[in-house]
Every structure is written in C-alpha cells, then in structure tokens.
Length: 209
Image 1 (cartoon, rainbow, N blue to C red):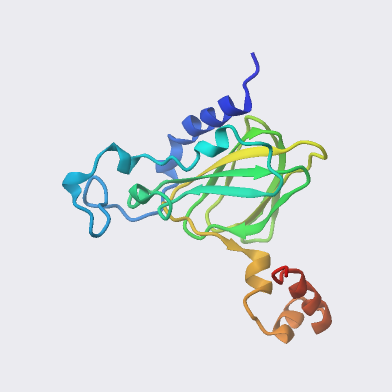
Image 2 (cartoon, one colour):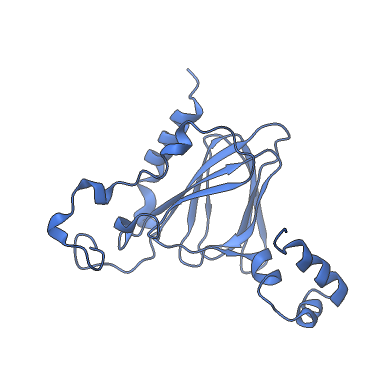
C-alpha cells in the first residue's frame, strides 16, 4: 500500500532521528539538559520537551510559496545543548530554495513527497547534483553552498531536514550579497560586470510596496 504524504512525514522524522549524533556540532553540555534562564527546573514537565509547531502541517493544503517551518533552539528551547534541530520544507511546483549555507551544521534532507533537484559546491568549486525522488536522503556537508529546486511542473514537494546543531544558522547567498549594502562598485568588480547591472539585481530584492 502506498504511503500518504502524512505517513511519509512521520517516517521522515523517525529515519532522521538516529544519525544526528554523527553530524552534531554543538558543544557538549555537563547536564542532562539546559534549563532556560529564569525558569525553575523543578517545575518543568513533559510540555517543555514537546514542540507542537509542526501540527498545522499535517492537514495543510499544498504550498503556494516556498515555506520553511523550523524547530530550532529559537522555537523550541529544549533543544539547547542537544545538537539537533529540524525543518520542514514545502516547495510549490517550480520553486527554489536559493543557494545558501548552514555555518554550524551539516543538513540531512529526506524527501517525503515529490521530486527535487539538489546540489552543493565544495571548496574546490566542484558542483555535486542529484535528482531526488520520494524516499531519498541527501546530505549537504557543513558550511557548503547548496540549493534545492522543485523541477516538477504541476506538483509540489515536501522534505524534512535534520541538522546536527540546535542553531545551524542560514546564510542566503543572494540576500547576503545584494541586500546588505555592499558597495555597488565592489560588487561590480567582484562579478565582472557594471554598476547598473548590480543596481538592477539589488532592485529585485527590494521590499515590495
């Protein structure tokens, strides 16, 4: 019997739960878990270790925009010190997760529905690409620029990513380059183009009125 999207989602959680110790990058802690500042440890119960922010995804409609739903230390404080976090990525047909990096962790992506073209570039500028189908797992090594593209014309895709850090961080290449006020002339020289082209690229990232 074929698995539903919901069943694949839960299977992804189970599969990705076990190899995280091999890719963890956070410092070890000297206690069982980290109690947030100002919280009485004796008052903690199972609610502290439970995150319900993914519940809306279970019965949600197909995505209309590329969407990332995170469970990192920021959203789920119990992850502090545990060297693990998750993200659910939803891709409408033809959408892309632009080139980016995670400076503090590798990413283990499990495609639960649809197809994706993925790739990363290593420090020798070699591009590694693959077309994934549902059930495939792909690892993006720590700190390397990578991307995902839903190449399907008429269907969405859903993936679950695990990170070996409670706060893997995300640095978007386009946003970092074109929205952080780096001088136009510096960018023009760096990309071997002219200032006008750089300004047009920056305009594309300007907030819509």
